[in-house]
Length: 214
Image (cartoon, rainbow, N blue to C red; front, side, top):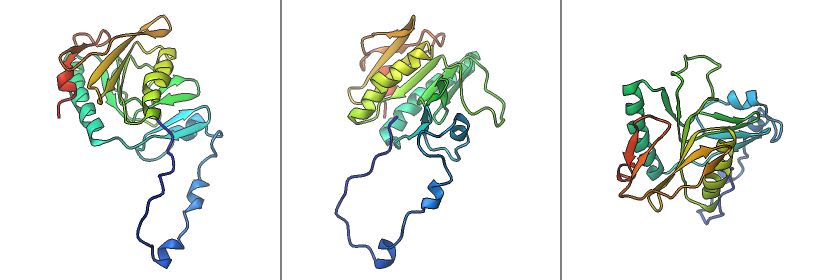
């Protein structure tokens, strides 16, 4: 997803002297590495469940998803998980779950499927290396669209992930990209009257109307 940026300046009521004199807790920032100096292990040891991606020593804090984004995520996740569990096909997870896409790069897809069984709880089970299907729900904004349609498409293809779904709430379309050699083949988006089918998850299909149901 995208790096956090400063909010626009807005007009607000004057703060009290006590509040206006408060300073950020810079000491907390000093507990973490500088940008460019993060290691894979620093990233994986971050506390909490904030969505964060890692790229060659730098971290990117991801924007909070909208309600619409989460409704769409839930529609897909529930259907896919029920199907996968009923046939014992593997494991379905949703963010936050880092996926290794290069030796020094992690992405956080909204939904990920792997044929591997669910890992046991341990300190080492903090990311996936063997994703077969990743699904991204496009967030609003030009930079977010570029990330999902261009940047992540390239990253997931280089990682050898067989299938990538781009779910776009604005036109209510789903594009299924399948790996051919080292790149995803272009595919026409599926509209509200179509059905999305996976070639990676045997037998799984979901109507686009169900994906975007409120």
